[in-house]
Length: 431
Image (tube, rainbow, N blue to C red; front, side, top):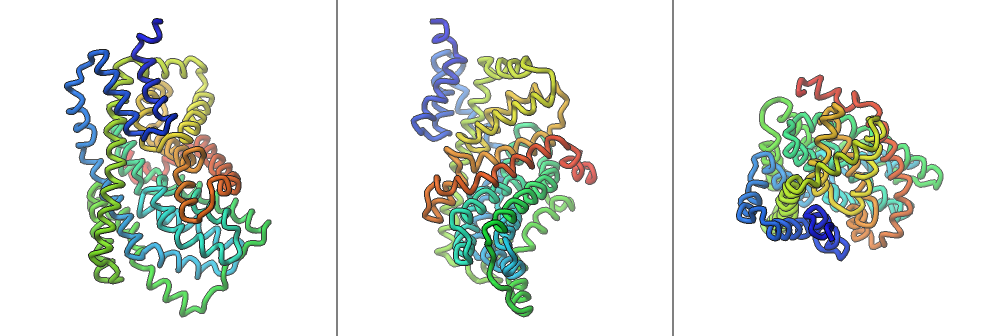
């Protein structure tokens, strides 16, 4: 059969079939690429060089440093102190803890840049706190898990770094473009969790005295300064986003050693171990996905899919709707960085043909992928939340539905009004 001799067919089949049997995404991408390149004699000798070249890039150095910084901030107690401050501020207002959870998740996103890491950092503190205050535990876990998706929208974001590398766009411009959309998505989530809390009668814990609130503010001060130092340094021209990641890591070490005095050698070992593992997973996917994207372009897969999408309609709104639907379904199966490397080469011709701003499209795509982190069956954020809370994915998925709908509405809002995304980068003369 001609189909069985077509490298395009095998490029897809050798990637999708291993995914069905739960082969890790990086392995599936690498195996598919190596097999097709070998059997169709496309120059397998270049694979090792291409593998190295795919990750030997200065902007990508920010990924391990931001991962390291996020884990340091968690381990030294910064997350705990920020949560304590927010709890004191909202007190026993109806839905206060749920709204505070969204705000803390947005703030922590400005530290870690990773959704699952944010769930782990704040979930261990907020899920028990909300449960003790009378919130349904499944709702509390769903709120933490969905709100943690803000971590890849609020800068600094690992996904923005990956997107900027693939599309050759300024990472600083991407960071600036993510601020307003991140706030908008957070606002939609806040309204939703408040509505659910009001209907169910969820309240927080009584607020402490003024002295207690001031003490919580003093304790959290060094944590609150983290995004100020990172983003202020980038936009003030003091350092690049990659250098900012290294500064964030050293700042976390300084706070842990000299301020909170919680960073021991044992904790440092845990931090470095987790950082190495997380970085290795991300960079393996980045390298293998880069190879797979090259293969897709070589065999003509990218041109065929792009032509198919453009052939459906010439209406940009219809095409954007189709792209968002495809990305939402892809987010149910793959992680955000893999989707970037697999789908962006396909979407580049479409972006150029329709004249879309690549910065705006990158933010819209990232918001879409943030939703994918909480949509089953993969739903990495829900998985981490389930592990922390001791609940099943099924128990968490139901209360997560209203929050996912709110995030999708925010996505539609950002698609309809690109100016909201591009306002800050233009104001700061970054684009």
